[in-house]
Length: 283
Image 1 (cartoon, rainbow, N blue to C red):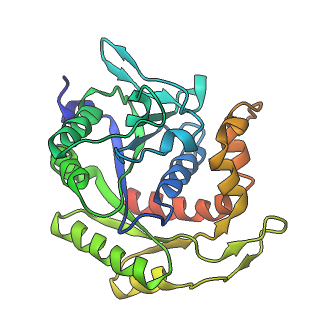
Image 2: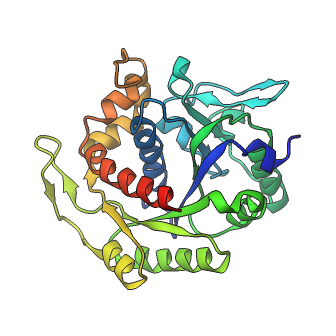
């Protein structure tokens, strides 16, 4: 088994996506972040690691849940969501389950060993960004991740996802407290489910609360990366990504990416990725 520092030596930036509670769309944000970083440059190489061990959803959202990982002499070969381009690598416990509906009932030590194996055994190769999707809250998985990433802590940072509602913001504050207790730099806050994007004209209406994430960022002196509305086109796309993945690709990228770039959320994420690139470039 390779040393984690050795395995991640050619990974430039690691972005941990956190949320204080479930149901705020953290995994969809992680997926969009990976797709948007991939699209930010024709040469960008991105990895996405799903350590939500009991509820892995990244393979489904990327339309690769029917694939499996392969063992090589150099370690596990990740699944490439963009096929032959091999610039968007994905790894998840979802690829290791015999049946998609199987539950993962593991205690802390087993989770810890699995996360370590993902970091030390997967052949990530040269990556500009490694996005890590985590479970909601702050639990064994988060502590294990921080512990194992100690050799590359200088390349590790986080993004916090919340919704505008007061309950979600309270949990997001606990998440922020965790990052500060373990010394994990926070790049900024994303307010998800902020309003509703009309599927016909992409006009955004504020159906529910709005601005809570922005206020949290202001109060805690964090960067507010942006607000993302409920986007029905995005929901449909990530719920049935295989239809897009099977469609013909274009010069802009593989089928899923092409369809994603037609959503209102993709336009907003261009600005978010721009801010992240600027922050990471200045570190």
